[in-house]
Structure formats: C-alpha cells, structure tokens
Length: 179
Length: 402
Image (cartoon, rainbow over all chains, first blue to last red; front, side, top):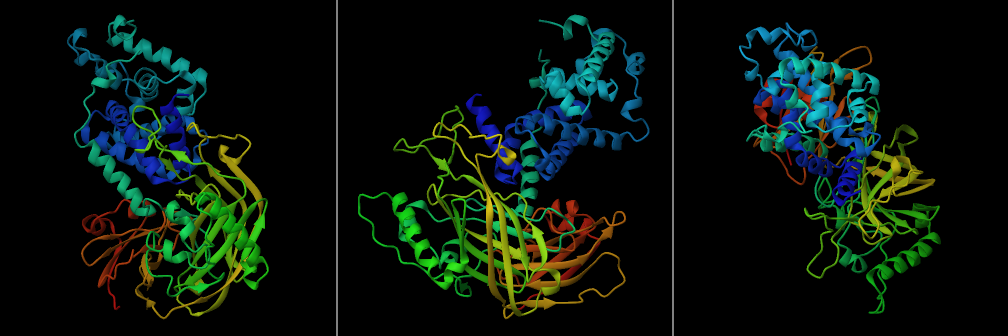
C-alpha cells in the first residue's frame, strides 16, 4: 500500500462516517476522472458537468452504504455512470441507449478512417459501452467492473468480448489492441 | 491499455461545479474546522434527531483550562450552533481547578493525572452521578442547557487506552511536518453508538458518530451534544430528564508511521472499539424565555405547508407537512435565508421528516424567508434565493424580534 492509497483509505473511512471535508478531498482528487468518464457517456460539456454534480451529491448521500473503502472509486464510478445514463436518457427519451444498435450509424460514416474511438464507443449499447469505458479508460479489473455494474464477472467478460467485436467493426483492430 | 483518456479536455467549469456541489453538501452538514456535527438519527420517521459535536480546546492549553464544569465556554464559539451557552447553562459537575504540575511533567501526563483525581473526587459527590465508567472509558457530563427546542450537553470523554492520531500528508507522499520536524497530526475520528430519550419517550437511536476532533491528548476529548426535543415538547417550558445510553465507542487513527490501523474485528474495521454500557440520566429545564414562537403559520388546506416556526438565539426550527411520495413515504425539505439572502445552514443532512433545524450561528436576522420544497434533496441543492423561488412549493416571510 503506497502512501497515497493509505491517505485515500483514511479519507474514505472518514467520508463514510460523514466527514464532508474528507469526501471533498477525495472528490477533488478524482474530479478530472469523473468528468472524463461522464463526458464519454454524454458527449456534452454541460451534461457531463451535471452528471458530475449529481454524482457528488448522490455519492455523499449514500456513502454510508459503502462497505469496502478500497472500492471507493469504483463505487463512485457506478454512481456516476447511473447519473450520466439518466441524463442521457432525459435527452433522448425516444431512443433509449439500450435500443441503439452499434451498426446503425455506420451508414453515416463515409470512411473507416473517420471513425474515432469515442464515436465508436458512443454507439455501443449501454452495457457494452460501460464495460469498455471501465476497462480501457478507468483501468478497472474484471472483478472491479463486476462490482461497479453489479453483475457477475462472467457477464463482464462476455460483454467485453462482444463489445470488442462491435468496436472492431468500427475501428482498426490494431488501434484497440496496440501494444 | 489506456486509450487517450487523459486527452479528453476537462471543462474549465469543472472546478466551480465541484466546489458548488460540495458547498451544497456542507450547507446541509454545517461543518467547520475543529468541529464535527454528527447526525445521529438515520430514520426519516424518527421523531427527533440527535446531533453530536465534539470540539476540543487547543492541546497546548489543556492543562490550563478547567477540566469539567465550564466546558461550554471553550466550545460554544466553534459549535455548529454557536452562541452564548455558558451564561445560561446549568452546571452538572462543578468546575475543578487544575493543580499545578511539576515543570518536568508533560502536558499529557498532567491532563491524565488531573482527570484521574477529578474522577475520584466526583465519584464521592452527588455530581458523581453524572460520571459513568465502563471498560476503561469514562464519560462525564459537564453542563446542560435547553433553548425550548434542543438540549445542549457538554461532556468529557476519557479513555484509559490511548487513541492515536491521524496525520497530514504532503503531495509527495510524505508525512507533513512542522518547522521543528514534528509530524502534523489531526485528531482521531471518534464515533459513538447508542440512543437518547427524553422523559422516557421518543427514544432515538444514534448512528455511527464521527467526532472528527482535535484531541486534548491521547486520552481526552471534550464535546457538545445537541439533542432535539420530541415534537410534543417543542416550545414548551418545563423540567425534564434526558437519558443518554451508549453501547459502543469507536475511533479511527493511524500508527506512528501514518498507516491507518484497520482492525477487521471491529465494526467498520475501525482502529478502536470498546463495547460497554454508559448511561446518563440528566435533569434539565426547558428555557423558553428567549424563544420566538410562530404557531399555525399556514392554516390553508395546502397539502404541503409550514405549520410552525420556532426561533431561539441558536437556531430556527421549522415544522412542516410535506408530500406523500407513496404510502408512508413522505418527503419534504426547507431552505431558510436571512434578510440579506444568506442561506442559514441546515443542521443536518438528513433533515428528519417534518422538522428542519437551521443554525443562526450567532447572527440575529431581522427577518427570514422560508422556502418549503417537495423533496429533501431539492432543499439540500438550494443555495440561493432565486433557486429557492423556482423550486419552492410554498414560501413564508417572518419578521423576527430580538
């Protein structure tokens, strides 16, 4: 355990017991991360900020339910994703993300070279998008993703596999699997 | 396998958004450095909330201060409900004068010795009734005051087993040190678990208590407890008894290397846990001489309305009827502003349904604007009058008289 982890763990434990300052410190340490994750979901600055704000409020409200302090960031990511998804759905009431098909926007793409990773992720079904973001942007392990999404690890692996296939259709394979 | 994540530009408004969100939380929590407000009532259906604040004096002054009997004087300015309690309080356990210690003796040793001699003295007097000990932990009630809305109690906590400290860390991962090279410590985080009742009724369970205090030393804490009266006693003068019953005392702190001490055998993996029985029954008089009462404020048929407002020198308490989100699931919240549009901070983050308490923090507003929201979370997210006007289902203006 490095010193930063120790410090964070202590802050999380304080926050769990209602210490706003400790919670605030934790939030400010990961605010850029939270914003970027939110932005990946909603693709809009205002909505991403709203998602972060809502996440901060909801996080403090329910932090007493966090059983494992070491999972704070994962747990907060779960809340953030829920907030972002809710906001996104409010903006797209007719076409919930679950029903968006990954292949649907392809017709609007004139060239594969124009595909941007973020655009590709954006058209993935929600559950696939979530595992991709958590895996490749949050650097979470499969077990952490399972915790964040509240689904079995086997489902995470299956979603990852299918999500990669969807992405391959949009991206050069060596982009995602480089290195 | 990072994919350009760090290249996603961060909004220039993110800092402000985060700051605003945290301020909203703080407005519900009413936190300050060197003090801790504890929300002891987890259930929205509970009849009254218990708020505990432990706030201690400067350790360097510990040996110079009276130990018991005049704690309010050292606590009241930093209390979330700041005000003058010491002139109005009833002293439960008389002040003890500190005995001069030999110069070679450390402050810590002096404090411990003094506490021990003090405990021995009080045990032989009627005031000893207000001292309870179990499993190496002694609680001594010092002073008590009731403003007609809440009971304010000062207490001293003494643990035979030393509690450690927490440490500040530099951004480079090293323990922060002062100019003399000594580690900069922060207080252990202390939690109490138990319940409170008044006149044997309306017993409320305490939640986990987080004191977040600066310690007098490894053994001593002083603090204040705020217990709201049950609804039927609000604004009524009279003599009553408060009972405090604690079953667990817990704390989090670090070892000398700054590592959090985590004991998986303790609830919440806390560093320290003592299970025992600490029960105090304390008489008090509800003093309504300073209380302004505005009853039956809204007699309309509105399903969501403020019914009564009570104003003491320390707080504004609002009684309201909210909305039913579902059977047995009422919701509502209140935001209060002074004549200048300044938000009066809410006493707790949960706001027991039907009653909301806001600290005056020593101010004497000439008038207040009260906004009733249909959800607690809406009230919590309201920090200016414009937002309040947009969100409120009802609003009221009260001229106050001091």
